[in-house]
Image (cartoon, rainbow, N blue to C red; front, top):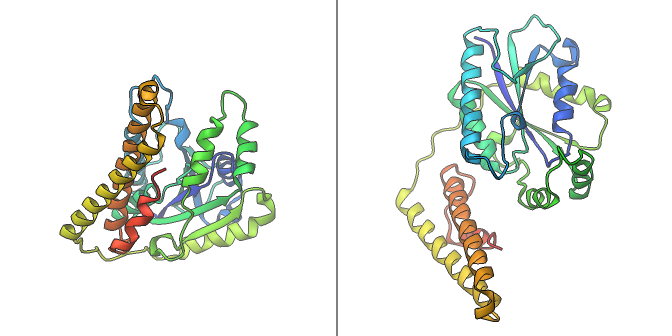
Length: 291
């Protein structure tokens, strides 16, 4: 059976993730160290226009399903690729496949889902983080033009929410960090060594963690109460002339409650995946995420 590795790219819009993917696709077999490179660009499948009827989460799930189908096909030795999945032109004697997952992956939960898929399909999981400043990302994003650029506010929001790889997490150990402004040819040897490491790395297997469901439910409830109290305090501070600000207050309340739901979802995920210990003291970290 061939060795398959999911390589998650991490970085803000304009950091150079797709540029790096194309650069890898054009490299000769000696740099790829026996990997056949496949490129799956999430933007080819996303439709985030306001008129789109398919929810963003459903689109991401579609991509995860596509990745699973691709892995099964490669393991079975099938050469035909799904539409929009590109394969490198370089030929190698190896049947090992490196699947580049080209997305921002700014939330750790997005990456962890790929890790779970890798583990379930007996694949390797690795990450390549293109670190960039928010200013550099905004400048690069603006150069894409009206058709390709994201709204600056979206890039700024991603910059605030980006969760860089953590060396303390076992499943994020196979990570290479590069500066987004660097010339990839200048660090070709570093990339070569990283790919060689992936070729020789054993699968990361972590024991299933025993979930403390009653405690999780209790902490989730406590966090929910704290978030609701914070929303109430913020609404009071924003309430100056109630009769004139009712529409604005309703919109603000709706936005805060949507944040509350997202924070609770993130909290449950972090608890179950072992990214944070069960502790009442940790709740304040999540409470302060509400802004």
